[in-house]
Length: 262
Image 1: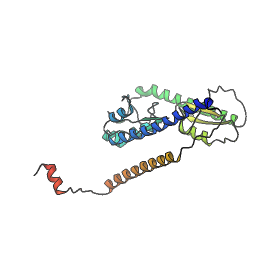
Image 2: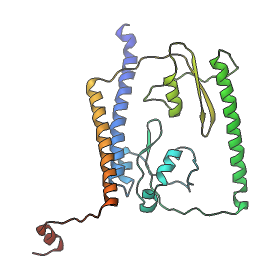
Image 3: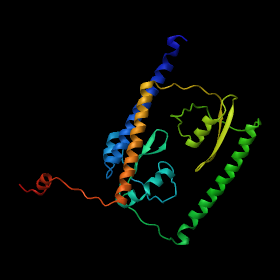
Image 4: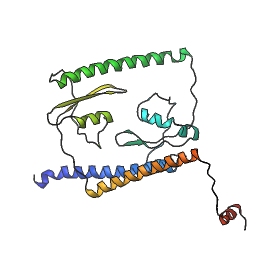
């Protein structure tokens, strides 16, 4: 292909790779800042150029849509965040979207009168029933597609999905996409969506992705080793504090300086 014809495609690929690298770098700094300055979100927000937002009341175990996904709520309602008002870890709530939160006010669970929650219970049951019916219909359509039938479906415009860039698609659905047999296309996959029923996908084409060079691969491996080592060290310290009585002896000169003695 002549260079002029390939020029725009090359520029877009370079921009995308640059964006991925910059995001990975910022994500690491953001995660570290959230952890190291765990009593405030301001430094992390300033680093990312983001605005700190305050939510309404959240209920344990009841996802309220992005960014309050089930994984985010699980991080919020831990002993560390509830009792000590510490930041959560940086949680990926969508593709290329990290969120950290901290509790401002907490009220323990209490029994409410039936009249207060009756309508909410009814809506929840109706929603659950609708999800179950949608999942049943989705599975039936997937079986038809996989055996070669052509049910009447309105497909949306095609989009490109990579392991790193998968837009709004659920991680479980992306995993199924990359497990599909690419030898015979089109392939069809489907999965239940916790809040949106069922999603069907048709795989029309598979392209080999660009492989990272050795330097980047080594850098990613080093970052993974560092993150794993830090987590293991923190777990070891937490366990040691629970299992042992630790007494710290300061040097005599340091003790005198701290108390103001000559």
